[in-house]
Image (tube, rainbow, N blue to C red; front, side, top):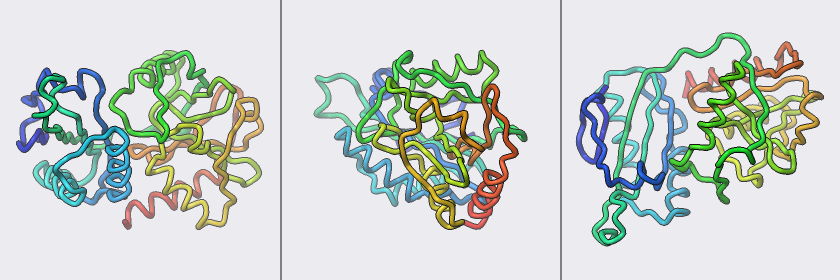
Length: 273
């Protein structure tokens, strides 16, 4: 694979990151993970708009306009001759030496890979107390490069045979997954945690909310108590990489009728985007 690093295309096994880059030393940067199908990036403007908002939050100015970033992403896809896969854009503050900040130029990194194989059956999730992990909640939420708490939770959930953890906060309200969003279905109403909880406004989450509305389902962004999950009829997780996957937890069973209908419509839109 060919990656893009600060103006140069380099082979992935030869890619080198400056040791002084604050993005990798301290998590001082943002990233966007995007899917592309038939060489078209899904909802690329949504990703760029979220990135633009995040850069303003962390007071980081870059020389690229979002249209130029999109062209760079498309060029990486073209150079790799890859029809479908995952492409990741990372922007860091660059040199972490505070004495040199006045000379600093933000760094731009783009990596790419084919799709990984997804489970064909519903995946298992576990519920974890986010207070037990060093998770940073931003208001507004940003796609920070500091994901240590999330990754520790992923590791713990994998040890329990789960695909993904679902977090709840100190008030025992569901927030989000480690790297994905969560949706529940109760009496044909679609429920998902609201953004005031400090969760990331996922691009795929936005698309699913729109699809639910288009399919005439009642959709509610709200606070979902942990104690209420056993009352749900269906549940699924969403992200750019997986699209959406039906999920279950210990003692929960479902036939996922509505989930599968939404999923079919989602992938029709991805295919025809």
